[in-house]
Length: 447
Image (tube, rainbow, N blue to C red; front, top):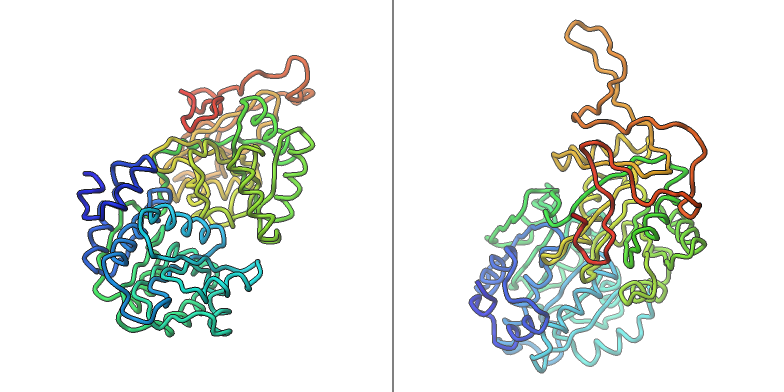
């Protein structure tokens, strides 16, 4: 199957080809024809499988084919997203795929920046508005945007918007829209809350569920390193330097932790920047641009970046700290292994995080390869004692409850730093378990 067989206009097919794509992903192959037919859509797929193009391409096609029915300059398509980064990514996709279409104007609307340039842009007219809910309602309050002519409503990453508490804002926006419109709801998961939202929003929708809920893409090779908490920062710097990683996205749980880790990496000679909600929009945009251009090697982010970041061929993601919610692990590692590329995700797991790690493995319904790194103290993790059928307690098991060997015990001699003479030249593999992180810059793990 090719894009031109889906019924898209030649300008859109050409734009897709300009980006190097010739075969639609499964979500695109199913969603695009349904949207072109005018159907409402409830769609879920793994992150990184092309959901943005799945609604952008047919939306542009329909806008191009249908002349505006309302007043000139009125908003015809509204895309709501949870974060500034995702808004910028979607708006860029609209511009890229619409580059061979004349006459369609797009305006990007989000908070954290001055509202005045957005007001000026909206006054000139906007066929498509890509917005975060809060800032869009600011414009509604100032009467700088007219939503009475909207023909298409897209809720992208709808589950994340609900997680972030946007449900009231979303309902306020929906009340401002005309009753007759096409509604597209895209999400990484079909949670009960998402289905409830869909029931009140969508009319006889086409339902597409490409992948099992909370599953990671097969293109991402996942590994874990069991290490003591105090040695995580040193280990991360060692891995980045030893294997000459040129681009790695690192996740922490807190803004303060992201700042502290960034300072440590810079001190170790590794170009890094932090990305979190306390950063100004200018600082966030600058950090992301530096990361994409290769000016810095590590982008240290909180979960604000778990959705919406689309970085071509991002080779590595590291969970420096595990997320509080297991489902967020899937979204974090979904930043790599996108658009058919291979990727590598490594989790640094200390003993305090072991219950969270087991919850993640349970969610994924699989055990993830784990290994140790020469010169770093492995976290001494033991499975809880289990009572046998006769009711007598057993000593702590020598193997994890999933049957995988626990980290082997090591002598507590002086640890060698990565830069000291005689330091390990590669991570020491645990028997039957993991492999070293990949050494190359590309998205394929080492084989």
